[in-house]
Length: 422
Ligand SMILES: NC(=O)C1=CN([C@@H]2O[C@H](COP(=O)(O)OP(=O)(O)OC[C@H]3O[C@@H](n4cnc5c(N)ncnc54)[C@H](O)[C@@H]3O)[C@@H](O)[C@H]2O)C=CC1
Ligand SMILES: O=C(O)CCC(=O)C(=O)O
Image 1 (cartoon, helix red, strand yellow):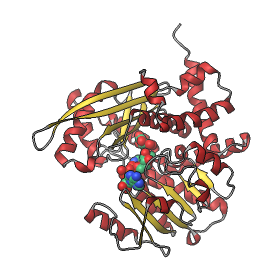
Image 2 (cartoon, rainbow, N blue to C red):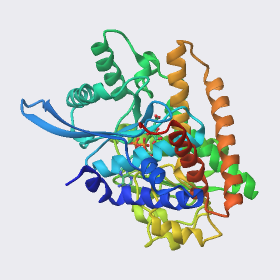
Image 3 (cartoon, rainbow, N blue to C red):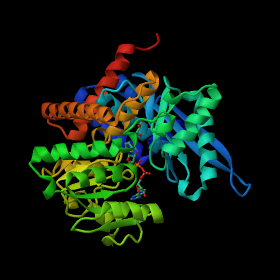
């Protein structure tokens, strides 16, 4: 079966394509340019033999999809998750193209994935797998080719092992190949917080537009990992009540507000939220339907569907996760004037923007203060928000489609201007 057929069968990839088509219709892209802009440019599939602690050799499968290389080096995170598939990675890579373009970054889009549950590996096994994955994708990446970063199931330490493997191969330390690194290896101050901080910035900005004060704001967050916890802490310090959080084991709800510090300490000790005594246990599905001012899905794709979209009771839906809303749910939400949707490519763009700052700092070998990082970040977020609002008004479309119109139009224009080989 042709590779593209495999990818096109993925519901997540189909979701990204349907979103693309809505925006491409508004832009009036002709069939050739439309297909050229939509399709992933390169899909790398690798097999990785890794020696496990008990002496066995286990073979893991991994992917790196470069969706767009026409506007600069490709950029996007690496996901370690037991359910990850090539189609899902291709969809995530496509969203990276639009996200980078919308933010005005000089990058294309990419994403990586390894089919593994990292929680089941020892630290040594995780290190061997991370290094092996880097070794396998090494011919296809580089500071001017494709620059990976963290995503679900990976973190600064994994990025540290990967930059070490790459640098050992090149014969010199080359930090610009990866972002989201430990500070000691050329990471940027603020990158760890950046995605959640950006989500919180958008939430505060849209709440302000609605005239809603922090003391009248309640927040429910699905997924309390890097993005969810940083967004939660930023909104908690701003004065909002965080009434529900969750992880893959389930959630906890307290209508009077949760103690986030205690929740974080519980997770540090017990690894998961399970059993946290600060509220009543709830399921991840129940969390999405809680009455709250702000709902932040910050875990995986396709959690808001045609089954629950009509039941959401939030005023703002802030997409910390990539692709949390299915196409059918989008259509339902479009009819709901009571909910403002802040789409993923806008809402979670703070992470890749600070990754761009990290890459710039690595190129210049000159490092910025956290204040400088956040000042520059907030200015870029404000610019992206203003252009999305203007486009939404101009075309009378949803905020997601407006964001995609902007992201796609810049990539399509660059492709058209570059032309084709004769
Ligand atoms: N890390 C980053 O800088 C960025 C991440 N994102 C997106 O944000 C989302 C979360 O990413 P991270 O926070 O980095 O990942 P993470 O691995 O740090 O955290 C993921 C969280 O989701 C929970 N989770 C996993 N499966 C779940 C399920 N089925 N139901 C409920 N919760 C579940 C995990 O237990 C964990 O709390 C993903 O969609 C990712 O693509 C988007 C932009 C940048
Ligand atoms: O920081 C980056 O380069 C990519 C982050 C990412 O994977 C995302 O925005 O979904």
